Image 1 (cartoon, rainbow, N blue to C red):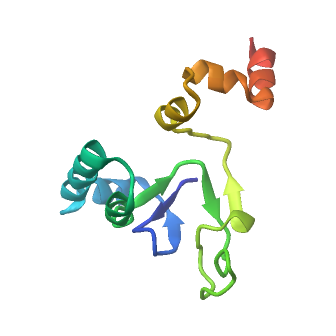
Image 2 (image 1 turned 45 degrees about the horizontal axis):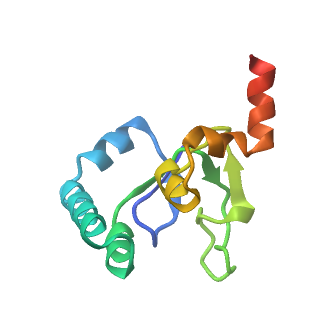
Amino acid sequence: MLSYQQNYFNPCCQLTRDLWDKVVSAPGIAEITHECTDIYTRVGKGAAYDAKKKKLPMAMFCCTFDPNNGAKGKQPLNTWRCQSAVNINGLFMYDADELRKKHDTTPKELFDKIPQWRCRLDRQA
């Protein structure tokens, strides 16, 4: 199962194929995405980029969330993004570009530094 969040400030819900199709074709999404890309290209990450990015919907391919009251326990009961309520589905993603910039390395070198992933791959070989 996958999760969807309309924007940074909304609770999550199950992401279905129909919802995915609606989200990616929704009016304004392409425009905000282009604006984010433009800001990132011109000035990199920062307040302007973060504010614009938080307006975009988010798909969480790696997990779903149990009902919870948010990370600080102050939200009404719902499916907020909260580590204590996460149900990981086994998929994973990592931002290789950002990690490569920070650590000046290749994605394979980064991957090899995580022993539990390397062991799993070794067993499959």
